[in-house]
Length: 122
Image (tube, rainbow, N blue to C red; front, side, top):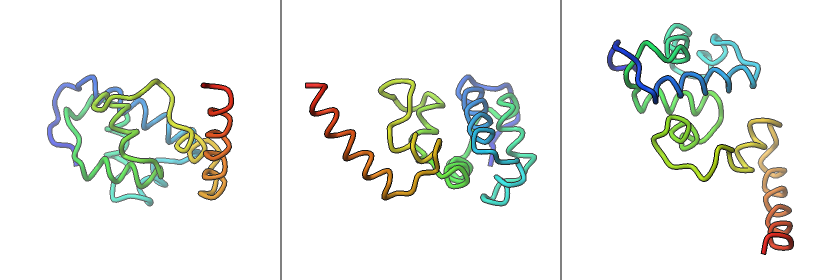
């Protein structure tokens, strides 16, 4: 999962902070995240600490993505490995994460937002 136990990188520190915040906002324990993924609670704790591993494997990133039900792109953005438009997640990601909105509700909100954006943001 993690490759090396060395000094942390800024990306790993940012990742750890983000994943911990996300887990807590979702109301999940490390054991629940472990149950939803192939990651151990000990490994999750070390990643969240952000100061144990220098890198993280693609497999581990996919497991976090699956456990938190968020696109891996958002995780990569938070690590600073992909450009993001701003500091906020997109509407779809936000609604899924914050409100656990069903897919149909998210699709309807995206349509409504497109109408509002067209009307007011020309």
